[in-house]
View 1 (cartoon, rainbow, N blue to C red):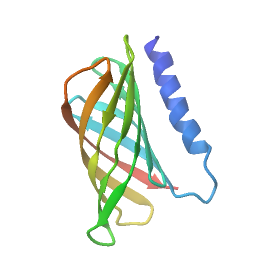
View 2 (view 1 turned 30 degrees about the vertical axis):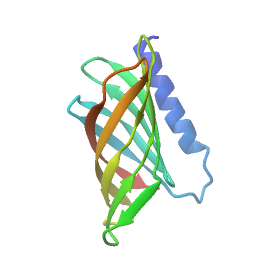
View 3 (view 1 turned 90 degrees about the horizontal axis):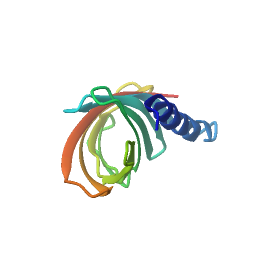
Length: 143
């Protein structure tokens, strides 16, 4: 699949998910940066659903990740810890599907901003692959 078409498709899916929500829903939109593999992308939160459309600059791989916050702990009014299992897909040849489990800390000082950092253990399901742990950080503007 053409890389530009893949990038457009994953971005379209992420934006469509964000547009299909009620006007009074709890929504935030921002940017996500991954390490150590230098991936960046659009990142959205709809309630407890996390949606990321990603792009690897070094290999031009496009991906989409969907995670759901199943557990969270509030350290204070501004600091939160969360666990968000989910699935991801990379538009490569062959297409890669996997599971991941972001463990994150989020700060939302002003009501309009969320800043987070998370460790992301992941494992490819098809084709099978090795267990990996990466990380991401980013910010979201609450709409």
